[in-house]
Length: 325
Image 1 (cartoon, one colour):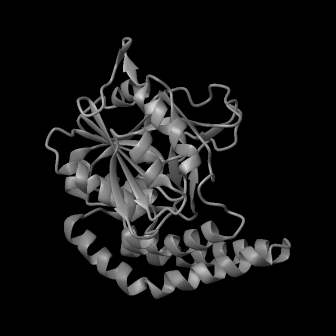
Image 2 (image 1 turned 60 degrees about the vertical axis):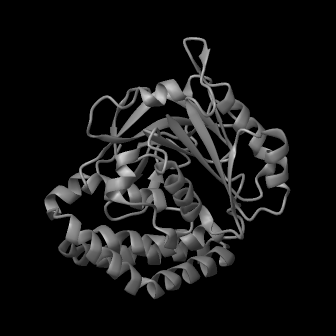
């Protein structure tokens, strides 16, 4: 049983193509059946565009979690995950953005990515919805002294990422997890609201011994940025905030202290690019996000202490997690 968790916020225009692609899933020409083979949980973050009414009228087989306001991606998927775990038949949980369209064999192919017991999550090949010659994301990576990034983003798809392999982590916009990953590693950090919460979770998952596998045969199409616009600087602000917590929560103390000068230098360089690149709005948003992250340091330290009590990883082994391609 797969439980599909879809967070949404004023994303009504995307839901039909997303839902219809899920309802069309099949293996060997046999369709997966809703409530028998999979369930769909839509978590609505207080949408004001008629999402709830539309779903109740047109897709009665969907399960709805109705939140009173926009709590962000992390809380929305956490609520869906927790509801999924109450069902003992659920073996896997698929996190899916509302602006995703899946190929008809997506379930089959992404499930085939669990080739050994150590794999906790499977990443798929995400293609640009509007230009299907372009890659959207073929696995999330993170630079030890830099920021997380989506591998292959905006590259022309020439088959350069068509080999299945172990990678750092899956983009939670379309990622399949075994249920015991959440039972052992916990949930997404709701203080992140959105952005980098999946990287934070992937890092924690890796430190707990789970692996992520990339299966390029599992393909979906993503309207990146369709729900949240980057023009307002909202994404930049949250990324700057969450990057501080990501490092402080997870990096071994010696590595964290050693890399501090490089972290600071990278931020200065980035902010200078905004300021002198005629993007004063982004500069101010980035600066605001940085100070928001500093204010959250006490909470990050508390979470760090909890994580350290469960994980003992050396600096050497930690650095091995940052394999880049």
